[in-house]
Image (tube, rainbow, N blue to C red):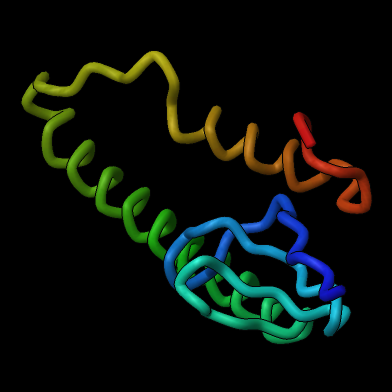
Amino acid sequence: MPLLPVPVPLSCPECGGRLQLIPSSPESYHCALAHEYSAHELDAALQQQIHLSLQHVIRQLQEQQTLIARRQPLGLYTPPVDSPLQLAQQILATLSRDVTAPPDGL
C-alpha cells in the first residue's frame, strides 16, 4: 500500500501553498500545484527569498529616510509609534533565537 504524503509546516517558494513530504522519496517535497523540491533545492529557494525580502526592506527603509528628510524641515513629519529601528530590533531578536528549535505553534 503506497504511503500518503505527509503535510509539513513549510510553504512552497513558488506559490506559497503548504508543502508535503513524499514518504517514498525522503527529503522530497511537493505542493498541491505539483511544484517539487529536494531538501537542498528548498533550502536554496528559501535563502533566495530571504535575501530578496531583505533587499526590499532595506530599499524601503532608505526611501522612508529620504521622505522623512524632505518633510521634517517643513514640519510635516510625525514619527510613528513603532519606528523602523524598533522593527529592526525585533527582527534581530528573532534571528538570534535558536534556529534548531521549531517555530511557535508547530
